[in-house]
Image (cartoon, rainbow, N blue to C red; front, top):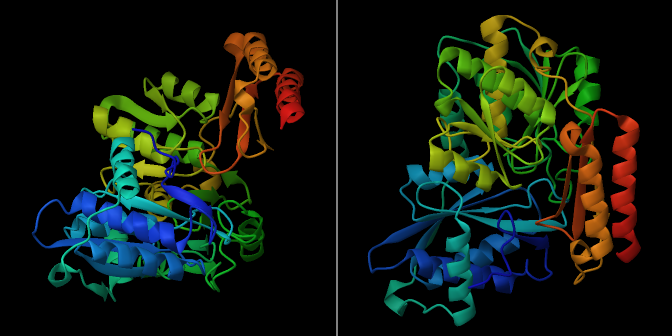
Length: 446
């Protein structure tokens, strides 16, 4: 079986345009409901969302689909993606759903599914759900239609969960923290957690209006938080994205630490304490070569996967590893949760600051990155630039020129019609030559 709806992170697209329409959402809800409701016992689903205007439409459509197959729906309202994973397990739900397009603009939206264990669904499960949808799910009998109920304390439950992962013997008193919530799902929960743990919180991006999520704020636009850190002389800046499953950190000087630096710090500390399972960190092919070199110097293995935090999680679960993530800021700590959690990752960094008494700038630059450039080339829908012989020749030539001194990675985006090009090399001239050669060939046919 093949699948056409699901990408690297659920179903995603422009709101009110295929596949992110109310009709498709209802069909998906019904198909997922039938997939998880395999007997006549009572079943339940939890549905969370971020702050996009289209979330109302998708939420109602999914609810209709799920209840039509006999599933009882619990509506969480705006809550971080990791909160959905946590509440799916906590409430013994059969399935969890997050309505979000993560770091994308407000005009987009998406649907992510979680299994009863709180982990994102596998490719196999998504393929089976899509097959049920195409075949047409069997509706429940009239007396078995599900009910829907709003869960009023969902945010409070997540707040308590997040606080529990912070060490009991440490406190954040005296630390001034700029917290950018991207006008997204964590706009209420994240400031509450930091304040209750004792931090002096300076929140920004906490006034969502349905259209301003990720708009010049959050982890994809850290400039606003950088200015606020400098203006307020804060000790740390924490930038979340729209659904709060990723994070970037800003030290007191205004320098940004990406996911690679955060993972390097956590892996180093955990290895010293003997709590890094398997003495390995799982990251994607996008993570910097400098991270790999740093870890190898400590006797820590770097396991690389395809891009996508769920592929990271799959490798972690297969091998019993407890730390992984992406350069973009998805940090997965399976000792604490089932998916990337930007707030919990930020708390772990704050714990390191409180534990060592060191400044953020002393902790956030663990290794020197190998110079890396990323470029996105948009292509016409329906075309496949990577199937072109000249493009493949340019990629092969770049790989040969860099050999053991760098890396080339060219891949299609899983959520947009883009070809993503990544080149790493210490020699900046060589890096630019390889990047430009590949980009030129892709643009020639796009």
